[in-house]
Image (tube, rainbow, N blue to C red):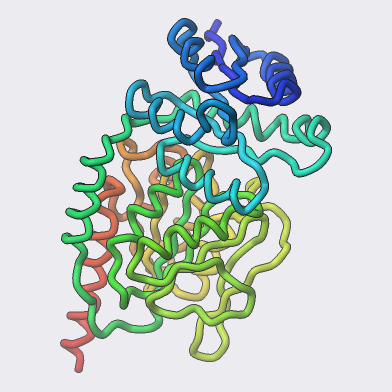
Length: 362
């Protein structure tokens, strides 16, 4: 019999600790081996009990969850699922937690805490299962991380020059995707083709995600809005809890954001976005499949390839979870399989080749 996933719950609310402990212990494949009311108590439990996963509240006394997470990922990296609040502050802090190495997060309901958390049972336990299998990496010390950021900025490619405005880059991601998307977007030059992105994320968090990326990138990054024109030099992120795809209006691509049903259990769904790119963009598309659990978007990515797109898929070693990329490869959707750190440069090289071909025809 396979061993159970051993979980420690860290939360300053006795009610939340009790609810999460009960939910975890009801699962046949996991058990809560400890519940701590603050990070200092959690530190001792981690040392003595050696859990597979911890759930970690963001705001706690004595040491907040972000400070604790940063120390944990530097000294003893392990899978962490954050428990966040559905507020603007909570969303910003959650983005920071993902940057520090948290595998995923669950958003506490605003009201009806006990009933709300029970309704989230499937989401909570699914994310714990995924986290237990995720690849986590030791967080670099601040000085090394800063040096790496300076080197990355210096290595950013120059402008692409004349490119067809017909071109679109389409990106899909799930678990671990927020940092993978950052890795791809930050080197992209300011005159990059339009980029459309679906990252599995609930309502209330994509605004902060887009704002964070916009502060780091040469391109403009924003949440997609229904009816807006899709422009070069911009990246558009599917709003949490909505479906996002593209349509055409004359010579222009236009964003469509609606309340369509979940697809592959997801809303937003990569499948929805990639299908529209396959149908409308064809050989002018570049596809990118990044880390994530499941198979959302894999079939549509093959449709993109069949329509003439050129597709990049993140390799297993650099994925937090090698689910969606594995399925895209299995369906024959990948043209190149690369570490996430090489995908931006590969996109730029492919685009430069397109520019050269265009200039040779003039």
